[in-house]
Length: 124
Length: 124
Image (cartoon, rainbow over all chains, first blue to last red; front, top):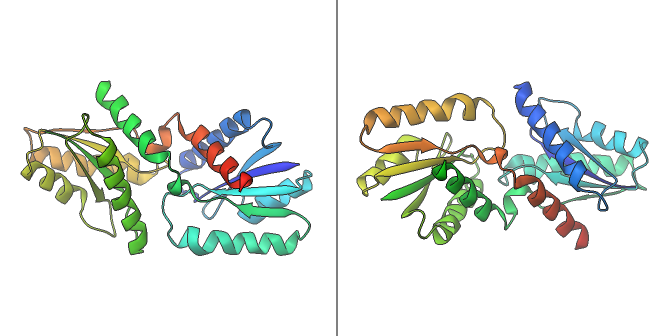
């Protein structure tokens, strides 16, 4: 069972965490054929943690977990905190393939998305 | 002169701020016809501030500044800090049209971008 785990920073504002949950639902609805399950986890300030998120996917039958860092820049969270958390998950689940995608900020599609966002607003 | 100001959080890691500068250069190269100039500013931890960024654009001849919040969630920065900074800019430059786009996290194009990012990685 192939799974995707969207990892966000987490916020003290519940609304911000809920945005991540809703985005995860949208990803799940569009990921058919590529991922059997899509979940989210948070680095801090919200639940579940990366470890808890991976544990739950493994309990549910995941054979692989692809971690997608929902971060814009390669700060300490992307450079150190997420890799360390993922390494700990690999030690705990040696038979599960756990990999990490490039973080969102590296996407080549971001500039055009931003221009479209700007043009949508100026047109309104 | 129509201008676009990408507003990012700012980081203690210079590399993260440089990513925003490089993204701004890319936006500038693709914004031809829509914006005469594209700059970036930072909410904290890096320069220029939003006020300094707007001031510079106005000095260079901007008649309008469209602020694009480069943020994924509606935390306090998006909900309060950026609007307050923008209001202060409007008071300082009453003849300039200063508006704010929805923040990046609201883009309808994000889910597909994330799925493509995930699939790119699994294919590699």
